[in-house]
Length: 279
Ligand code: OGA
Ligand code: MN
Image 1 (cartoon, helix red, strand yellow):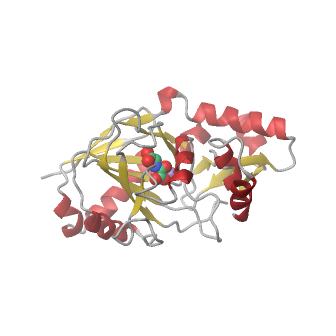
Image 2: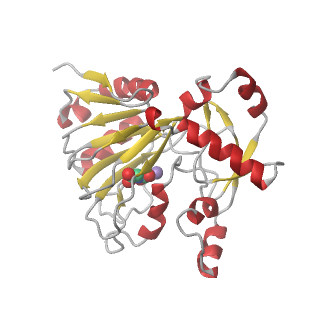
């Protein structure tokens, strides 16, 4: 069966049709086809794929090196995304997924931001819990020529504290010191990729622009984020059990629509590690 790739959103997202799970591993032409499509569309949706965790990890290994840090799940390479603390003891941190972000902007070490993230829906929320995506490549392209010039030299400090404060505005001293154990990271506002494409580095982890007052910094970053994620630019994925989605974490920001902490929603995530720094 031929694979069809149908554009979904106006600026980001496409659906891959006609791909059976066994072909993911059996057909060696698939990784290159999907990576090319991912570069073009930013997000690929596979409805009703019902990928098992082992196949998900095995396929992601064909795309690059997989993150194998412990993920509250028996299969190595799977991280369980759930707000239920009985399923994921670090669940409280995951409330930060409700804000727009790029994964891996404030790593514990010098790791590069991940290349791609794959999520499979094991259980979905009764309401809420959609995942939204917006292209940071398009956000750069949509700047005026003047903005491209004035923003080019700017550098931005990213912190775990900035993203956690959005969901916990009044942290306890213990929370605050735990957040501050994570080193802050300075990134350029505009990422010039190996491919030559440029994107904006935006999202919840942006703390402030270097050498700019906090107020001006916040207004600039919030304004750029609002334009990047304007409703007409966003693809919203409404999950059904068995759907799989992969996104290009280098050129896409994403967030989860809020869902209750006691929701059965459970996503199995596999992270393909990045090969290039933000520069
Ligand atoms: C993530 C993430 C969003 C979601 O796993 O990195 O942001 O919809 N997930 O669960
Ligand atoms: Mn994320």
